[in-house]
Image 1 (tube, helix red, strand yellow):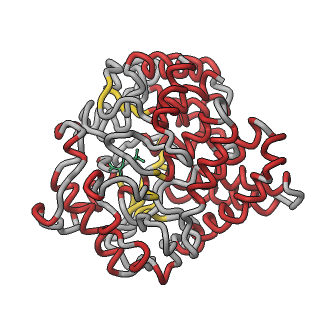
Image 2 (image 1 turned 45 degrees about the horizontal axis):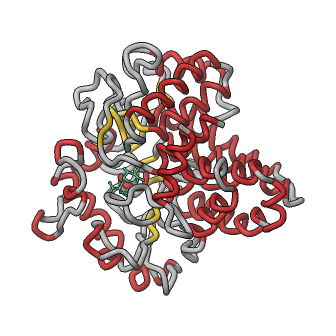
Image 3 (image 1 turned 90 degrees about the vertical axis):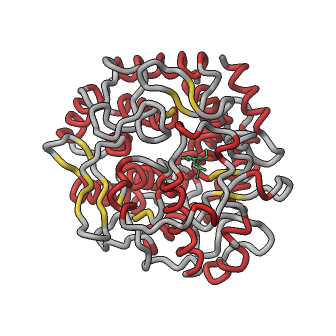
Length: 426
Ligand code: 9WN
């Protein structure tokens, strides 16, 4: 397994970073690279460090880490939306986009500081010799500053996503209500490259795409200034990952000889704000909060609502309820499914094959496994770990799988699936 997984990462390595998939996603993606670095550290600490350094090399002046860094050697029509859609070096100038590299203008979940800390820990000697943490710390600090200062659109201490692609679970039913208010770009104004590599019935619909395009176009036309968009949602996983990364940044600061106390305190404030704003005790789950339209909690059960389990200072009753929900009828961990689905097994929109509307994903299950271990649920974590390893192997490191059968869907030889397999193997 270790060799097979390492070969996937080798095949996806471009020389300075790793693509999620040679066919479907031939550029560098932000949260993919963080998960990939977490796995790569078991194969090559140097490559793991470079992965994160390359990504940070495309950071914008305002601190944002773009969700895609485009490889100029790849033809424009290989992926949509391509650099000529985002126009980062012109439309993003006011926000400090790089002049010589093409990127998207939206972001993805902040897994990076957590990844940097884990990469350092894998080989502290090499890390110190190369000054790895000193190189990445200022960029990571600026990234968190951007999120906390420019994206707290609700003013309650939580960060907002302004596009479903930012949260990384593109067509989750959690977005159906906020997206329904967005008028889609006409289908003939763009060409979906994804359908050349993925089955249409496993991918988001054309209507979803019309709305993704409209939101991204409007953001671009506002020159990527934050605050005015039609879509603004506080998401539990995005904010939990920021809090976990802020704890990691505190450890990085200490390693560099500075104090980490203020950062730990900030992570704890984020944890408290998550509980205050997004926790629903009756459902035993965190929900997304819509900041536009009528506003309020979006009562769809997505896997995102379980992921604050990765946080060390979550109240005990919240932890206990989350574990019950993960193992109950809606997510079926250790019971009805091989791996936790991306969306409620009993929800009206559940579909075992359509992308983030039901299939199980390896990154979310890896986070869940980590959260279960953190809170002492070792037997449940071990069951999930065993299932992850088995399904990764039998599905040929699929992008996502049917949660009941473990049958692979989407791309094979997928970056984070291979990387997180390596991490679970230790
Ligand atoms: C849009 C690369 C990315 C992941 C996302 C996943 C998918 C892109 C797409 O692929 O999104 O960013 O074109 O569908 O939803 O989580 O980072 O693997």
